[in-house]
Image (cartoon, rainbow, N blue to C red; front, side, top):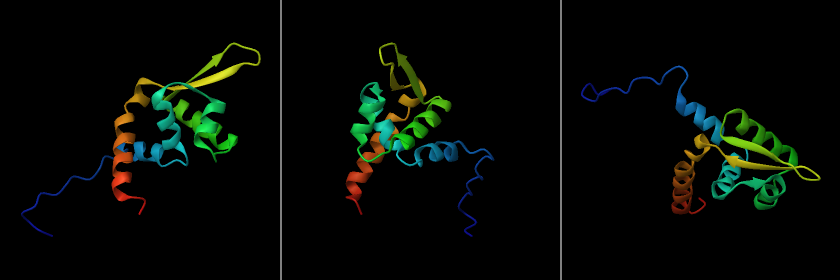
Length: 111
């Protein structure tokens, strides 16, 4: 080990980076967040936007993100009732992260 280079301290026990990475590493989660960045979406619209995601997986992801305070769920009174999902203020903080990931993905060119 190089004695002249300062050592980075170990991450905290409950590392906030790990928490955020756990959220973003969930199957389909980045795509769900991506589509919610533009405007609130109904469940069926999200399913169509994403394409190959199943209703069960989409429901699971949305519930997880709602529990974390990243996504808000609003029941729209109609017959039959409809549900709309949107990003919370905390969820909006992920927008630049998603945009940066998309830029890097373009540069990687699908490698």
